[in-house]
Amino acid sequence: MTKKLSHLDEQGRARMVDVGSKPPMHRTAIAVGEFVAAKETLDRLMGEAGTDPLPKGEALAVARIAGISAAKKTGDLIPLCHPLPLDHAQIDFERVAHDRLRITATASITAKTGIEMEALTAVSVACLTLYDMTKAVDKNLRIEGIHLIEKRKEPVE
Image 1 (cartoon, helix red, strand yellow):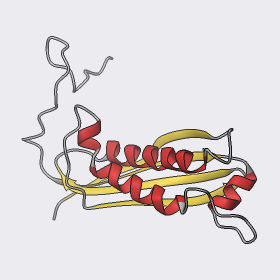
Image 2 (cartoon, helix red, strand yellow; image 1 turned 135 degrees about the vertical axis):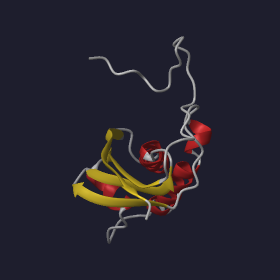
Image 3 (tube, helix red, strand yellow; image 1 turned 90 degrees about the vertical axis):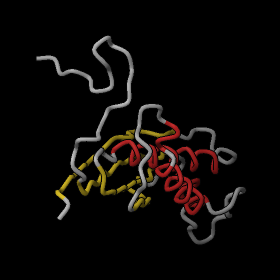
C-alpha cells in the first residue's frame, strides 16, 4: 500500500497542507543530534577546569539561543511548513562520551499541525552553531544522527 504524500496536490505539485478543519491539539516533539569533536575540544566547550576558553566565547549559550531562534523561524526556512507560534522551545546538552555531545531539542505548541520540523530545525541549528564556534580549534568536527525521537499529541481540554 502506498500512502499519498500530503504535500502534493492531485497533479503532483507541491502545496501547503490545509489544516483548517483539524482540531487544535497539545503537541510536543523531541529531536536529537550528536556533535562529535576531539576530547580536548569538548573539554574546552564544556568549560572543564584548566582548559582555555574557546576563541568565539560561550559556545553552549550561543548554540542554545540559536536553536531556540531557529525553532521559531522554521516556517520561514522550510517552504511548506506552517508558521507556528511556539509555546515552548528548549535545547539541552549532554556529554555522552569523551568525544561526543548529545543535543536535544524539545518544542511544544497548541495547534492544528505538528511541531516535528521545529524540533529538528532547532537541533540542526544548535549543532551547526557548535560547529561554527569550534571550527577554529578542531578540523575534524562532525554532526551525526539528527532525528526525531518522540512526538506526542493530546486533546485540548
